[in-house]
Length: 211
Image (cartoon, rainbow, N blue to C red; front, side, top):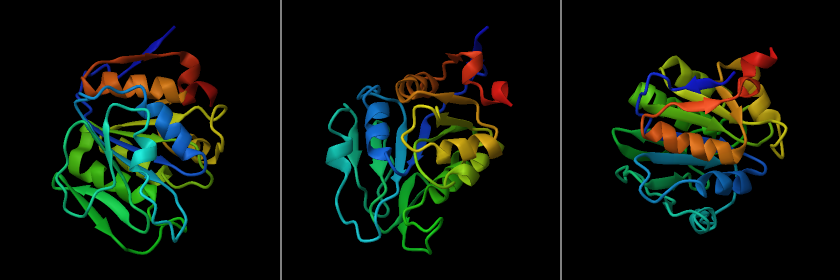
């Protein structure tokens, strides 16, 4: 028997995605499922080397119709735009603008996933969808918990599909994750949620079913 997530039909128009090892490929798959007129804005954090100065927006935007940018501090947030955290900066969404800072590393990295997720939980509450994809370690677990506690929805990549399962597995073990999905299905879910529509999942895709 199937389950509906977002049966409340809340418009979830603030989306945040976190990943580490294998994350570029996973994020590209998610973005490829989304249309140019997505009625939401998205923040993406992928762990990168301490000295990485490469602009990843072209790579991540190569197979999506969405506009993908590495933003500057203070840039206003716009629907239909994906903001990828630049190297060496934590990225937050505050007061409908991008906030970048060089605060201390979290989980041995900067940018880290948790600062972005925590900021949107405070600023946007139940409008948020948080997604943790492939990666080692447990960055994103606390951020997903913040999203859940604020009334948002938490999703993870299906661990058996992830190149590195630690981040999604840790989130499942320590958070109220609503569903563990393939990257293609995550993309489809984000589109439905941005429109305030419920999204059907299988019983097996609910982490609680495996407790």
